[in-house]
Image (cartoon, rainbow, N blue to C red; front, side):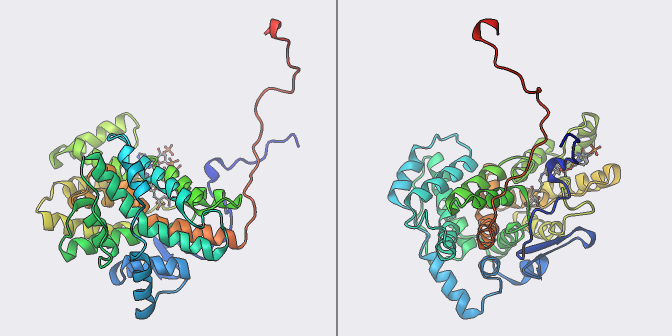
Length: 376
Ligand code: SDX
C-alpha cells in the first residue's frame, strides 16, 4: 500500500498479546499478580512465595513452599568456571554488564540449555533465580579484590542476597523491606525488558538467551537503570534545602527527572506508596532522613508544577542505599527479582507461541540502480 498507516511509536497503547500473569489498572492505581494485589502480597508474603505464585499461578501451601525453598537453595552455587570468568571481569565493569555476561555464561553450562520444553524451561528459570544473587555477589566482591562468599542453603532469599553481597545478615526489618522491594519489582506486564524476553522466546530461542536480552534491556536509564540514576540525583542534590532550586534548574533545561513518569501510570505508580513506607522505615533504622526528605520535596514539587508522579524506582533507589548497597548494584537487584516475571513470561510465550515480527513503514530513497564504483 502507499498510504502511511498509523504508527504506534514506542508501541504506545498497543495490545501485543494476552497474558494471565499480571494486570495493571492505571485508572485505579492497582497492580495484581495472578489476581492478588501487589500491596497485599508485599505485606503478607515472602518473595519466595511470590516467585512460586508467578510461575505456578497459585500461592504455595506450607509444604509446597518448603519444597520450593529447598529446591532453589540447593541450586545457589555457581560453577568454578564461572567464578574464574568473574575474576577476569574488568574491576570497573558495570554490575549490569557483569550479571548479563554471567547469565549468558550460565547458559553455556546449563545441562538443559537448548531444551525449550516447558519442564526444562521451568527448571532453568529456578536455577537462574537461585544463581543470579551468587553471581552478583561474586562479581561485586571480585571488583573490590575480595573472595566470593559461599551461599548458605539455610538462608532465605533476602538473607542470601545480603550475605553474598555485604557479608552480613541484617535485622528483620531490613530483610522485610528488601523482600518488599523484590516483590514489587517482580513483575509488571509488557514492560520493555519483559517484552524483549518474550520476543527472543518467540523465535524458539532458549531461556538463557531471553534472560540475557532482558537484562540488556533493563540496564537503560529509561527503564531499570532509573533506580541508580535516582540515587545519583539525590546525592547530587545532597541537602533538602537545595532540592527545589535543583529541580527548577532541571525544568529550565527541560531535562528528565529520574524516577518520575511512567508509560502506563499517569496518576501514580501503584507500587510507590508501599515502597515509600518501607524506605521510610530504612531511614529510621539508619537514622538518616536526608534522602527521604529530599525525595519528599521533589515528589511534591513534580506533582505541583508538572503533574508527574514518581515510579517505583524513586523510593527503591534510596531504600537500597539505606540498606547498605552501593549504587551500581541497584539495577542488578532489580534483575534478581524480575528474573521471576521474565521467566514466567518466557513460559507463557512458549505455551502459545507465534513469532513476533512487526512491520516497518519505509521512509528511505525510492528504488535505484547501483552505480558503478567510478561514478560514486
Ligand atoms: C521502569 O514499563 C514498566 O512497567 C517499567 C517499570 C517496570 O516495572 O518494569 O515500571 C520500571 O522502567 C520505571 C521507569 C523508570 N524510568 C525513569 O524514571 C526515567 C524518567 N522517566 C521518563 O523518561 C518517562 O517518564 C518514561 C520513559 C518512564 C515513560 O516515557 P513515555 O511513556 O514515553 O512518556 P513521555 O516521555 O512521552 O512523557 C510524557 C510527558 C513528556 O512531556 P511532553 O513532551 O508531553 O511535554 O511527560 C514528560 C515528558 O517530557 N515527562 C517527564 C518525565 N517523564 C515524563 N519530564 C521530566 N521528567 C520525567 N521523568
